[in-house]
Length: 315
Ligand SMILES: [Ca+2]
Image (cartoon, rainbow, N blue to C red; front, side, top):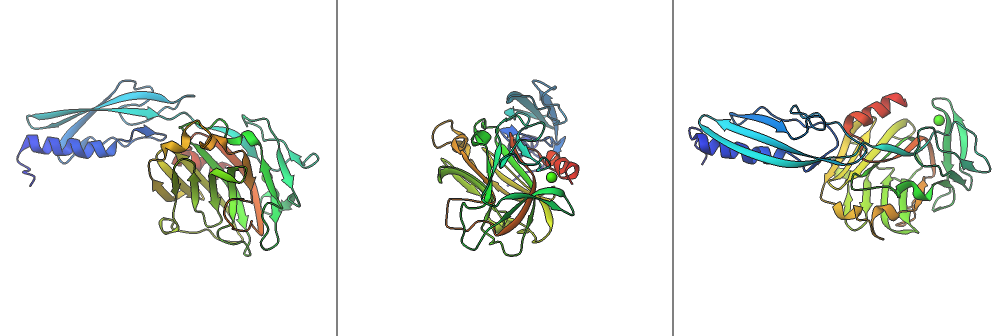
């Protein structure tokens, strides 16, 4: 029983509650409460430039560590808690493809601002077409049961720089009615084997490297509409996966998947077969009819505000 008259007990309980609120790493601003269970909480940061006492983060080129201290006071009782928090590196665009420049012998140069310099390849009948809503876009069409026939192949080094700061995949997509719900909008794997990362037409995003996580359909509030342009994004870091649709978070799996980011042969950085509109692992056929635009892969996790901005700025 909690005796709310017992200051010491309330301060201890408040401290336990505060413990639950502070993640070990962050890629977006933290909500730091000033009061918990009637106890006052005063925050101090070892580096307010990186993480302010109001919980605002300032991401750098590399991961950075900050010590956050909470002084929790109720009446005469006071408890001090310290937390080591990693401020995740600012996400940067590894590769973006906007399909606004014609292909040269089936090869597409990355859009301005991409850190990578490799080209994407139009495989089979994958082509650039003019869409009345979005202008120049990627068109992928496949026969029933097709796998690895018509799709866009992204550069082999797309995931090579991924660190524990995670990665983000974003795209505009218009999925046709005929496409199977499990078909891959995007997949990266190593020679048709694991490690893998993928998002399907049903918006289930997965990673399977040394550990496994997916955002199950039941957690998703929607499985996406057909025949309309939608902005789809997912982010993966050692704490799990988030899926965004049209700038809003629609699915999330919180799970320790730090093993996926180990820098060894089963780590996600080894995924060199990077495909839009196709996926080799499992028996699911490739997308039968889909249009894509602004396909982007970031090193690092985009926060909710970043995704919202990306959605708005590329609309
Ligand atoms: Ca375009």
